[in-house]
Structure formats: C-alpha cells, structure tokens
Amino acid sequence: MELDKLLWKGSLVLLISFGIFNFLNFVFQLSMARMLSIVDYGIFATLFSMIYMLAVFTESIQTIMTKYSSREDDKGRLKNIMKKALKKSGFVSLGLFITYLILAVPLSFLLRINYFLLFLTGIFIFSAFLSSITRGVMQGRKKFLALGTNMVLESGLKLLLAVALVFLGWRVYGAIIGALIGVFVAFLLSFFQLGKMIKEEERKSKTKGIYDYAKPTFFITLIIVVFYSIDIIIAKIVFPEEIAGFYAIASVLSKAIFWGTLPISKAMFPLSSENFKDKKKSENVFLNALIFVSILVAIALAMFYFASGLVILIFSGKFIYESISILFYLGIGTSVLSLTNLILLHKLSINKIRNYKYLFIFLILEIFLLFYFSSNLFEFSIAFIVASAAFLLGSIVLINE
Image 1 (cartoon, helix red, strand yellow):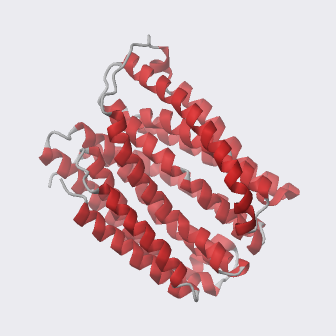
Image 2 (cartoon, rainbow, N blue to C red):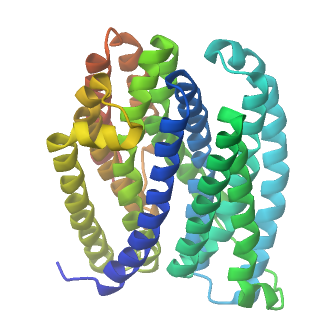
Image 3 (cartoon, rainbow, N blue to C red):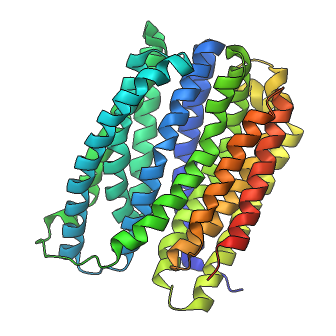
C-alpha cells in the first residue's frame, strides 16, 4: 500500500471541518440535553432520529451528484446537471412532504408527540433533497473547504438559534425551528460558493445510466441510514419515556463515531470514483481510508470504555448510570456500522455492486432483534451489536464484483 497524499489531505480538511461541524452538533445536543427535561429530550431525540433518516435522500443524492460531477470537466454541462436535479428534487420533495403529513397523524399517537412538531420536522424533507445537490457538486469537484464551511455555518446557526429559542421557553419547538433556519441559510450560501460554475453558460448534458446507478445508491443509503437511526425510535416505543430518554443520550453519543469517520468516506469517494478503471489505485485509496477510520474508531472506543461516566456527565450534566452502562456497547455497534459504510461506499464508487437488495434482510433482522430483546437497556444494546456485526459480514459476503 502506498500513502495517498490527496486522500489524506482531503480527509484532513474534511476531518477538521466535520470536526467543527460535529463539535457544534455535539454542543447542540449537549445544550438540549441540559436545557430540556429527560422526557422532552426523549421527544427531541426521536424527532432528530426521523430527521437523520432523511439522510437516505441526502446521502444518496449527494453520492450521485459527487460521482457525476467528479467525472464532468465541463462546467456548463455540470450546471445543467445541477439545475435539472434541483427541479426534479423540488417536485419529489413536495410529494413526499404531503404524504408525510398524512402518515404523521397516526404517528403522533404512536410516538406520543404533538402533531405540529411532526409537521415542522417534515419540512426537513426539502432541505434533504436540495442541499444534497449543491453539496454533492462541491464534493465531486473536491471543493472540500467550501463543503466544510457550508456545513459549519449550518451547525453554528442551528446551535445559536436553538439555544436562544429554547431559553425563551419554546422547548422542543425552539430546537426544531432553529435547526430549520440553519439548514436553509446554508443552502442559499452554497450557490455563492459555486459562483464560478453558476456564472458559466449552461450547456445540455447527458447523464447516461444515472437512474441505474441511483437505484443501488438509494437502496444502500436507505439501509445504512435507517439502520443507525431506528434504534432510538424503537426504544421510544418499547421503553417508558424516562428510560427511552436515558437510551437516547447514550445512543446519540455513540453515533459520534459514525459521523466522526464519515469525512474520510466522503474524501475517499470522489478519489476512488475517478480511479475506478485502475483497480490498484482504487484499492490503495480504500486501504488508506480503512486505516484512517480504524484509528479513529479505536480512539473513540477507548474513550467510551475508560471514561464513559465523564462523557455522559459532560454531555448531559448528570451522572446517569443507565446511559453510562451501555455507552461502550453502543459504541461497538456504531463502530462496526462505520466500517460497513466505508466498504459499501467504496463499492458504489467503482460500480462494483451486486446482490445489494439482499442487504434489506439485515435491517429486518435489526428491527426484530431490538423488539424481541427489549427487556432492559443492556439486552437492547447487545442486540444492536449483533445486528451491526451481521450487517458487516453480510456486506462483505454479498456485495461482490
């Protein structure tokens, strides 16, 4: 294996940017955990799990845009690709939003959450579709600094506005509204960051095979996003509200491993996609990324093992034994999922995806295990580890060239 300087440089830029982004998100979660009651935080975490599920669209669309923009040198044609994508995404997101509003009626009773909170959460559907297009172009053109800056602005605004509104007594409503304003301001900024391309004369583009590529991309992203989000929602259903809140605190912290290693995957994707015809170069990029991810995972797990009490105390302002006792185990499950995500993204970047539809089995397995093993938080957490390990093994065995 040779050291891939471009990958490490791009990864470091994104790692620093995502580090600031994730730190601000951590402070956001920390602030909400401290400012909201345990019951309100359980509602807040459930709503944000639903928002994170929208990353099904965000990540899949961004992945597709990254691939096509990394291989398109003509800025005029790239502008045309982006324009068509924004138009189609606008119509699709509107349809999904209307469908969601109907489904939110029974969902409000099942989750014991006010309907208007679910309505506000649904507005994130538009940002999930639209922001992912401009950010995908930035990623594909290797504008890693612009991409990172855009995300930092979003998380910074979200934090400031949410804290201010919750402090004024808006409770969970303040957190949701603050986050909404942050994502839409960042979306508008992205057009200024793509200034040179926006000013180019538009030329008709051809995106041959884009829908064939979109199918596995969307499906795989769907499985990954739902896989790491659904545990909090199931916990809200099977446990009393306070216990669900304890689980949500530990689960949100464990997800920091996934989000902390994601910059490496994002830096790897356009580099691997560019070199998809050169098997040796592509594998070298992947091995560099795998080593980088493994180092970060090891550091995070050591922190969760040796200082779980301190981590929970800093995050929530309380010494919560129930959250402390499961943090390390949830960290293991999330670490395994991070490796799975890296493997699947690499395969997507080089068009070497086969049998991807069978991955749905592992999501069904996770849901079954979490509902069945729900007598206590420890049992529930071990079920998450088993499901994650099965997903990793299945990804290695089923997804072949």
